[in-house]
Length: 187
Image 1 (tube, rainbow, N blue to C red):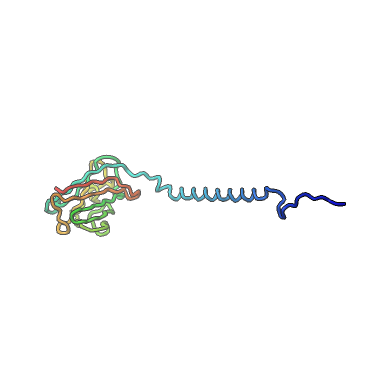
Image 2: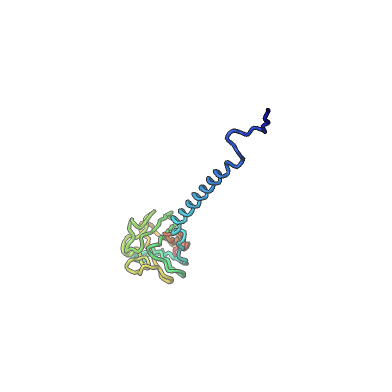
């Protein structure tokens, strides 16, 4: 008696569907891990992404006259827009002729010290060196529309002359957003 057998089946395989459940489980685990990572990143960075900076417009002027306490004063005026918390402001000042660049932070303050200036310190460190909305003695903590703030450039350190160019940039520090950038010519 002879038995006829059909074609031989490969060893270890009973049908063609054996790998499908394993591949499906691996794909589902991969998608779950990717979604969990995306959700974690959104929660970790959500507060920084959700904070909108204030919207404001600024103007500036630079006085080239000699004399203490008002000579060589850079005035920045909040012309319009949202009130800006003074503690969240940085001023970036660039003086063209002398190639000076500095970032001023730590407002409000009574005077500019080395703790407040990053870059070339060309600013008056006396109590007359800062005034207005950034001066701790004259602010309520916010820089409102219509208010001015000023910093005095130290005579002798930098002599501002009529026609000298400068730029001032107002930065919202928590979001590192430029609120205003003004180019001025000393008068």
